[in-house]
Image 1 (cartoon, rainbow, N blue to C red):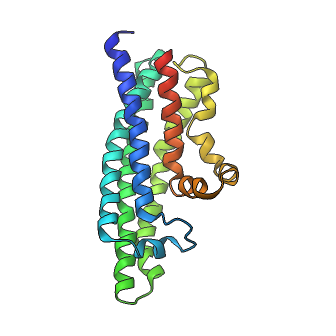
Image 2 (cartoon, helix red, strand yellow):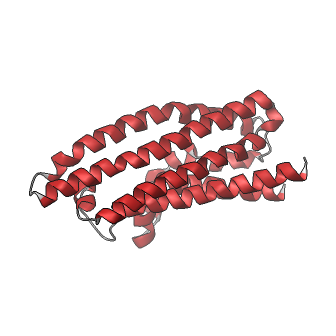
Image 3 (cartoon, rainbow, N blue to C red):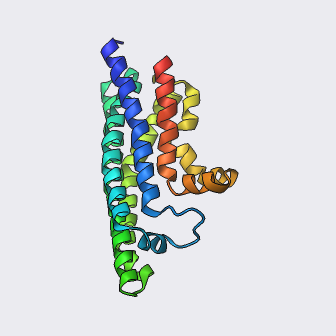
Amino acid sequence: MSLESITIIRLCGIAGILGALITGMGDLLYHHIPGSKQTLAERMSSLPQKRLVTAGILGLIGSWLYFFGAFHLYYAFLPLGNNFALAVSLSFALVAICYGVGHASYYAIGSSAKVARENQLDIESAGKTGEALFSKLVLITYAPVAIAMLLMLYGIVSGRSAYPIWMVVFLPIVPYLLRVPVLKILRGRAHELVRDSYDNFVLLVFFLMSTIVLWIK
């Protein structure tokens, strides 16, 4: 593999790591209040407008970086052929776009809840429209996620990708399905931070491991 290709793999892997950190930070700005037992709408209704806007902007930047992470996956699965690698990277790129749109839609929950609080209206009812939009977007996102995960699973298990077979443990779908036991293991502030940005935590672990593995390969 050429030095140029190796450099692209590494830079795009780092982009994926940064995407997870920045989008995760956006999640925490949206609704993380240490020790709070309030509902999502109640927490977001009490946050400053500037914080909610910043959270939305971070989601856009994070989705751009996730998009570049798709090129990292292209090279990781290139040994299975151009078409296979392209299918993996395109499906993940669609996931990255979905992350950005979904993250931005969260703003509707916070802004509606804030207006309700300021006018002494029902906060929970006000946030339901935004929550309904987010839920629909999540359902749509499952399609490219399923395609990406199935292709990546096949590529790794077949032993033909650039990953060692044990990398299958770090496929995003695995820790995602293990959310409950993972959160039970964590305690205190670590539990709250991971819980409030779990999807991005999962991708952070994946891109971190992927970048390390392909860096030293």
